[in-house]
Image (cartoon, rainbow, N blue to C red):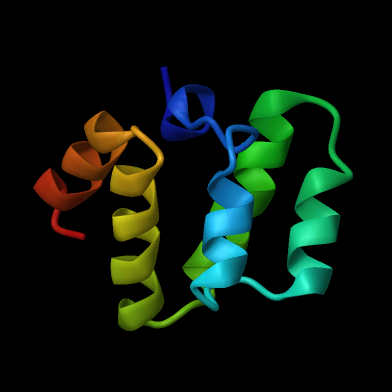
Length: 80
């Protein structure tokens, strides 16, 4: 299993990332346009790779707020 398989981007995570300024409306719409979960998650992760460390920190916070602490722990354990 990969991070893209475990991430739940449809549970309000994208809205949280948008509200925190991690992604903009265009990025959110591009990600939401994908119908297959793992493809949508890969799009999100691709966008996050282009972001700052501060945005990564906001992403981790959003995961925690979105009841995806297990994903946040994996990311932080791997040196994020």
